Image (cartoon, rainbow, N blue to C red):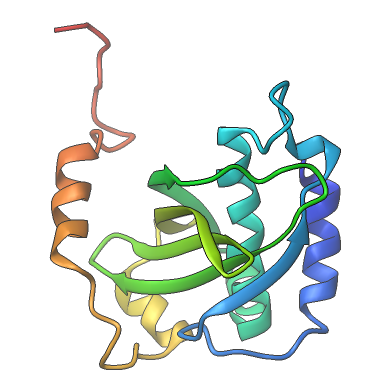
Length: 181
């Protein structure tokens, strides 16, 4: 909710930016706002992932995929994510969110995203996303019909498969009772 207005503004602005294909890298210039920081006066660790949503929306809007997804009733949801931090982004600092799709598997679309300032990576995240409709998850075949085939150089790194396998939870229709080992 805290980024709702910013997201709506981004959707409007991204539609007027230079078009891309969904397989291109997108760069979204931003500035650290007071709503992005925590008591330590730098971007809060959880806010990095929320801000990265903006980068993925920018890529989807600029590539035309967002409009086609909405027309079909598809919504993106994050299935898994991991992030590493190198430096802290400070209040009013200019930075970019660099976003690209690094591959797909039978269940997810995988993004790599970076927060970059002054030519240096401050944080990097890998995000597994699913597209869902009212009837359930969207198949990879349906996604590729809308997105087009990925270029030959878009190959999912092997470690991503291992990460997904080791970090996934049971599906939402499978029981997942809580108990500490």
